[in-house]
Length: 336
Image 1 (tube, rainbow, N blue to C red):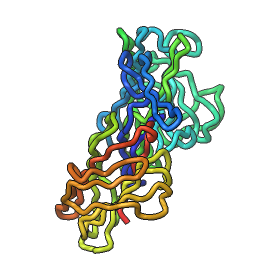
Image 2: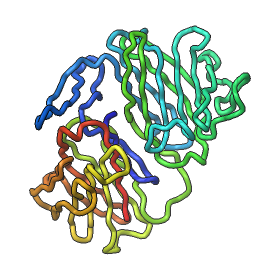
Image 3: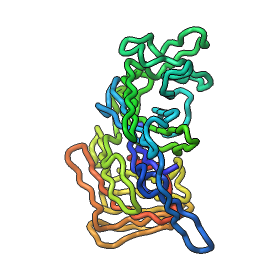
Image 4: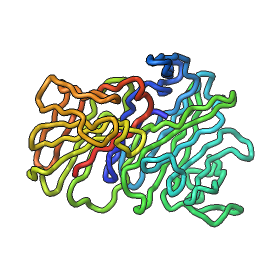
């Protein structure tokens, strides 16, 4: 799976940092293989891809569009999966949906229950826009409901090479926080698209006292080099000399073999941890044209900056990644 960028429990965003299996259908999909001391790129045509969007991108309800692009035609899409959860590919205590197109007895929308061990459905599209709530299971399915979300509408629209699954979703207050949107699909020819982090959504919760992460831009990008801008908000202000904000790019919340950096705004300095994640491996003091690197990434002084306006700190980091670090990474900015 490619590498998403996560942002603390109070805000979460996505930033794909490599081209590994992330291009659109018909484009070049690159896979990277280490041969001896060299990294070799293998290019294949992408036959299937998945993307998603939310409108709006935060709130207690939204409309999500999951787009499955099939190079062989949208009529070949056999099943689409869409998971809304915090950080991890885990169907338990999430909003996890599956859609099977067509008119067969098993066609329609499915919702996974809270323990992640029973699908509820199928719920045919024809029942919408005023179906039985998918947060309550229909007989003969088990007694588990889904405490995270309720599906209020669904529309499946295939055409050409792209099939769009549009879902109206309401969220419960207990599901508060910023969530990653994950997607995958399979077609009738036996091709599958690897699970990808394809966006993010924020469910509002209680007001945060102290530091929080309030945004990230761009939401998604591809490539070996890119700049990401993260905004932090602190109800107590940024005057404390001990304030530090962290950014972690990795497949998990682990500073080892990662691109893990920290900004100390009081001294204009960005630190990058070593490969083991146990000590500072290098630093740069802004503004500068210098760089600092570990085996996973390079922090480029040119294009890296931060600013403070009131209680808001905005950090832009220009990062370059090494080929062995290809794939999806989690970016976790936080203030300590």
